[in-house]
Length: 128
Length: 318
Ligand SMILES: Nc1nc2c(ncn2[C@@H]2O[C@H](COP(=O)(O)OP(=O)(O)OP(=O)(O)O)[C@@H](O)[C@H]2O)c(=O)[nH]1
Ligand SMILES: [Mg+2]
Image (spheres, helix red, strand yellow):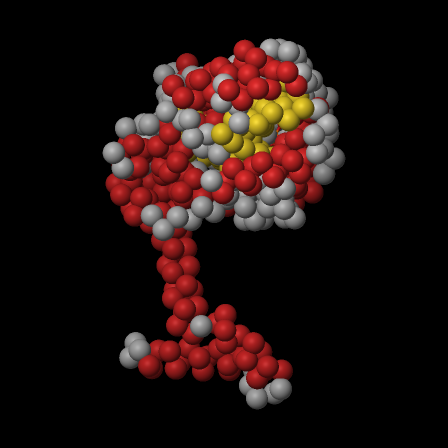
C-alpha cells in the first residue's frame, strides 16, 4: 500500500488546497496522512518517518517555498530517509521550479494542476 | 542490524518499517512477531473509543501530555476507515496531536482499517507488540467511531475508555445496543457544552442497572473537556487506579491470558482455514460444488461433510 504524507509547512492558515489534494489522493486509492496547518520542516520529517510514507507532498501558498521545501529534503537526508520522495504544490512561480528541482523536490505542481498529473507522477515514480 | 534488532533498539525507522511489513502481510511477518514476542508485556495498552467527532484524538493529545509529564514513553496507533470504493484513506487523527511530533518520547502511527470491521485494523494487535517490544511504556489505540459491532478493541487493551458527548441525540439508543459493554471508564467529553451533567446521570443510571446484574463495582464516569484540557488529571488518575487495582486483584493477568487465548485461537482458525483451502482447492472447485447443489445431486451440509470426511481419511487423521 502506498502511503503519502500531505503536509502544510509555513504560516498561512488556508488548507483548502491541501485538503483537496488529500481527498483526491484518497480517491485514487492511496493512504494519505494529513497533518494540518503550520508544520515545521522538522515535524514534517519526523512525521514522514514515523508514518513510513513513500511520498511527502508539501503544499504552500505563502511564498516561503524556496526555503521550506529544500529544508524538508535536507532533513530527510540527515535522518537517513532520502528514499522518501518529496513533491510540492501551491502558489509557486514557474521561475522557481528549476531551483526547487535542483534542491531535490522531484515534482512541482502549480495551482490548478489536474490530479491526474500528480497520480501519474506517483505511479511513474513507484515503477522506478 | 536486522529489523527485529532495530525495533528493540528503539529505532523509529525500524519500528515504522516493521509496522508496514505487518500491515502489508509480508512473508516475514510471523518470524518477526515470534521473535519480538518474548520482549512484550511491559507496556500498558489503553483503548480510546466512541462515536465520530466525540473528541477522541483531542483527548489522546491530552493523555500524551500527562504520560510524558510522568516520564513515560508513549506510542499512539490511530485508526481511520479505508474507503470501500478506492481502498484509499485520509488519516487525520494525528492532526490533533502534532505538537508532540518532535518529542522523541512519542511515536504516533496512523493506520487505515483496510476493510476490517471492528474499529481497528487486522494489523493493530501486532503493531502493539512491536511498540511494546520497542520499549514504549504506554500504548494508546484510538479506534474508528464506535458502532454496534466495534468491540474488538477490548481484545487488544488493558483498559478501554468510552468517550461520549452530550447532544448526540441517540445516546440512550447506543447504550441499549450494548456499546456500553465496551468501556472500563466512561468519559463524558465536551463538558463545556450543555447537557454533559444530564448525560453523566443517564450513563450512571444505565451502568447501575448493568452493575446490579453482574455484581461488579460501578465503572467510573468522568466529565472532561479535552479542548480546554479540563478534567484530564482526574481521568488519568482513574486510569492508573483502575490498572493498579486490576493488577492487585489478578484481574489484569486474567484478562491478558484471555486475550492471548483468543489470539491463539484466531491464528489457529485462520491457519486451518488456509490449509483446507489449499488441500480442497476451494477456489477451483467451488463452481462445481455449487452446480451439484443446484442440480439436486447433494445439499450444502452433506457436500461439505463428505469433502471433509474424505480429507480426514485420505490423510489418516483419524
Ligand atoms: N467544545 C468542545 N469541543 C471539543 C472538545 N474536545 C474536542 N472537541 C472538538 O470536537 C471536534 C472533533 O474532535 P476530534 O478529537 O477530532 O474527535 P474524534 O473523536 O477523534 O473524531 P474522529 O476521529 O473523526 O471520530 C474538534 O473540532 C475538536 O476541537 C471539548 O472538550 N469541547
Ligand atoms: Mg480522531
